[in-house]
Structures are given as structure tokens and as C-alpha cells.
Image 1 (cartoon, one colour):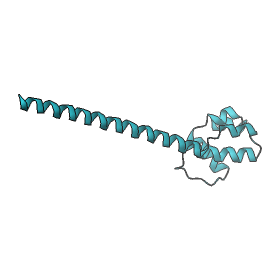
Image 2 (cartoon, one colour):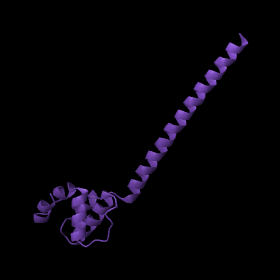
Image 3 (cartoon, helix red, strand yellow):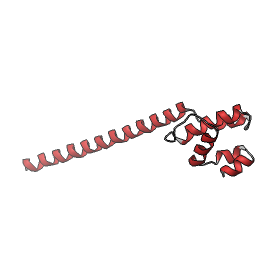
Image 4 (cartoon, one colour):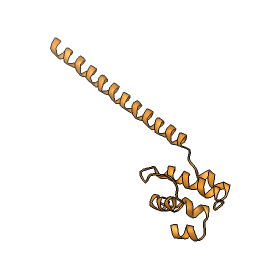
Length: 109
């Protein structure tokens, strides 16, 4: 895939590159990055470089996902997880309350 992109750089083949291929391309372009970075962040860096070098057109910028979007997505995931935990706790409290009320009735009989 990377070889195809290097021969004839186009948006579709670039968008289909795997992280390992993006890492190789970023090294080839002498970009400042860490392999531990998320794929999208490396992809954003490569897009900026390729657009600046006029290897890819400005339309490539549409492939960028801003970090703020990733941050918002993570925040929404965490909020959703928190709501699920809260519901789980309420459910357990409800079960416990009903169980305790049931015990009280048995003792009175």
C-alpha cells in the first residue's frame, strides 16, 4: 500500500495506509513524532507535511481529525460509562432495599 502511495500519491491510497505505513512515511518525511502516538495524530502530521509540500491537495485536510474531537469523544465515552455505573448502583440499591423490606415482613410474621 505504501509503495503504491509513494509511486502515485493520491488521497484514497493515503487514507487506507495502516499505522505502520504512516510511521514509515513520517520517518521518510523526517517528521518529529513518537511511534507511541495514536494513528490519527501521526496521520494529521503527515497530512500537514504532504499538503505543505504540495504532494497532496488541500482536500487532504478534510481527512484530519482534530485532537479536540478525539478529546470530546473520549469525554462522552467517560460520561456514558459514568451514567451506566450510576444506574447499576441504583439498581443494586433498589434490590437491597426491596430485599431488606422483605426480611422485615418475614420477621413480623
